[in-house]
Image (cartoon, rainbow, N blue to C red; front, side, top):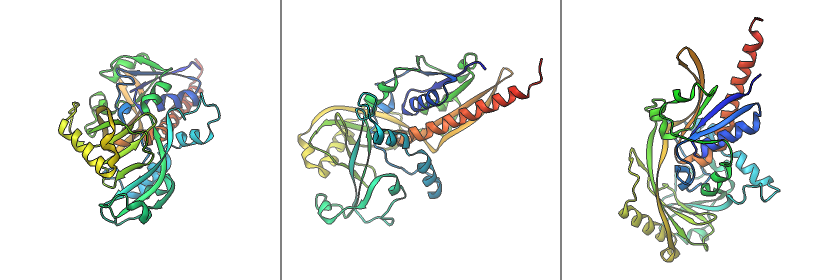
Length: 341
């Protein structure tokens, strides 16, 4: 059986994770990653990279639990726990991060649904909360922080072809299967009217003395220490396509974060960044068959993760790999059922 040619469209964390999962699990496939922008020019590069569950509008609590049970970056966690060769490990690109999430009022649900997907979840002590006099309640836990600015280049050494794809039909003559990880590009590529941008603006500062990540319970203010810098945020503006830095918003972010951590007032600002989170009411991970010029071409979709791209990337990539494997099994079965010529 000849090698199956697979194109993965999109070079963000979802695209690279899908491509690597397929290539490692299905060596009979030839995998090419196609995109017009690679690191450091993707939305994933500017992401804070915190592995933390988020809610999707219109998604039930039971379905949310299932999503994160299946998709919550288990592969990344396994690699962090079992890495033996420093050169091959992810420790250069990810680290464990002790975390505080704080609330001005005590939430109705003190133990969130995602508590089982992080390490050592507990309620913050009175002593810990004294650091935040305007907050009454908090969660303490450990999670993973992934530095996409180095993680993506680590994956980028294979599978890449730089070009812009305006229509998936451009790829149908050269590939047997398409994996669509184009994020917001799916609005034009596949006509998905349910995908929309959520604008995010952050600052990167130099504050090596910070260890804990601190996040206000409403998600509007956060301090995420990383490997090379600290990310301060942020904004969540649905339907906003602006990609320029808003000076008033930048000043507001720095002021809000400095109220939570006063030492940030002396931190050196290394850069400012704006990105558009590719959002959807529910992430789309599914296969469809597209009819083009008399040919049936399978397309596996993997996009719409919003601000949870790093959190969900490896889990959804494993699902993509299984959908590809399922397609290969169908092809093999069809070949066996064909009558001899």
